[in-house]
Length: 195
Image 1: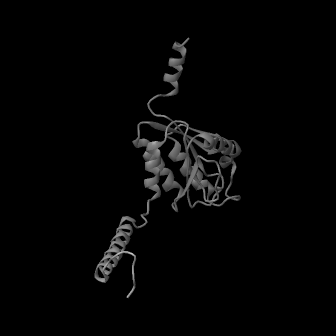
Image 2 (image 1 turned 135 degrees about the vertical axis):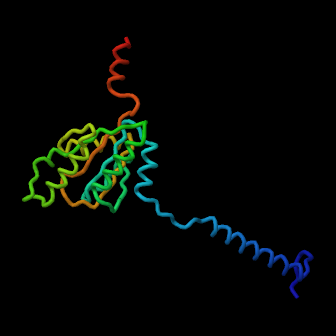
Image 3 (image 1 turned 90 degrees about the vertical axis):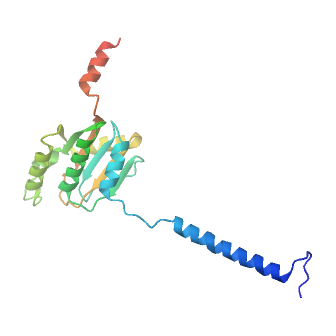
């Protein structure tokens, strides 16, 4: 028999050991049940969530599949695995459902100059993009200028890039968010009233 410096019966020791093991099992089960299984959050859900947090000076981009992963701190890229027009339609729908922001759309100037001999299918995607953007304020700027604007914005503001499966050059759509309830005309009027 083992001699312990304090008096404890063997039966009491076994009871304590069982209680200790049982508590470990219960704690282990609790930890396992509190861990949720990985949930798949769709890009549509991420867009909706992010858009509710975004405001003027934020950007959303619908990018072709070769768009590079950037290192600016404010830039977040989501691989949608979806078609370019499908993603653009979703973004336009989401923007149409919120009141706090509106979008100013930009396309690469280079898109206007590409021919079918350079990129098969470019004509139909260009037509589809222009048709979808005909109801929105939009501009064409050189790709390098848009990339610079996006990089600068990503230094201080959130930029959400939705990467699509499109494999045609200069088809990305850049969307600068503006205040949906306070436009440039109201701002200009306010500034004119101030000393």
